[in-house]
Image (cartoon, rainbow, N blue to C red; front, top):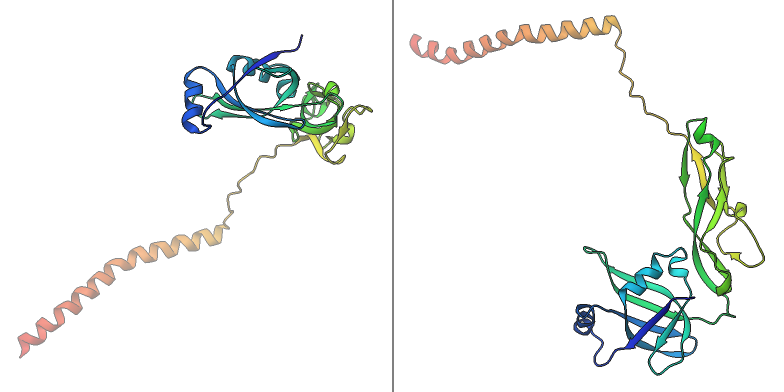
Length: 235
């Protein structure tokens, strides 16, 4: 049995204060639109929406939406907003769909297996593409796309062309787009400069000479300072 979302039409002004009152009452403000109907501002049960979003098919789930005074229609969640601090749903967009019309959706890619390049070659599996855009009829939307990566060695990749293909879905991404690959992790070695023995000895001698010259400079500075006093005494 498909999930049935009860949507109650909202009345009055549709502003931030009105949306806040809906949330205080324990509901989520939402909009239902699509298939030639005028958009309708509604409020829905957050538990129902959360149950759909966290299901196996997630936001691609097709369900029935019932609005008072209207016939129930098929719909999907096409957009949602969360409050960043408490991570609570604060707004939902629901789109009516026709089961005989092709849809454009994003489907999660699930990697299956452990690559040989990770098991025996010390590589790391890097998933580049986590979702893939597809076109298909609503009834043919997969919950996810599985791809076997167990045969991948170092520097080998799985591309969109390697994903399971059928006549029911069409991939919109480039066939050459990388889905996942096995990479190597190179450690950076910081080399310590090698100083020749002669150069090291010369550097040490220079440093010693500089240290030995410091008292001479101080002595000279003192003599120069005393010169005016001696000249004044002679006069």
